[in-house]
Length: 60
Image (cartoon, rainbow, N blue to C red; front, side, top):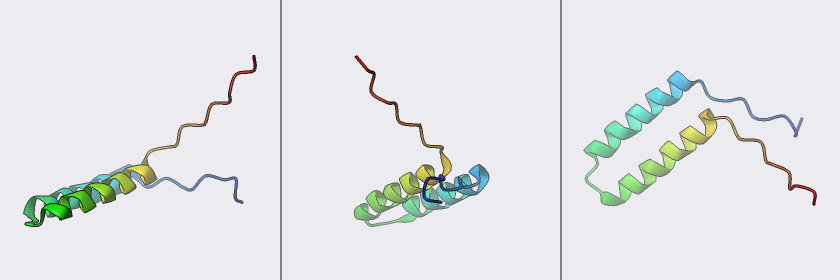
């Protein structure tokens, strides 16, 4: 269903992916590559960490 949240990524798998991305970033000669790798790390974190439920506005 559309209302069901997407399944979270396994934390260990996410850490292994992040570790690999950090290794690639350390070896990259291109400074633009670091920005792309940071974006990929953020994507992995977004798939791993649970979303906070949105708070409803208070009724006055």
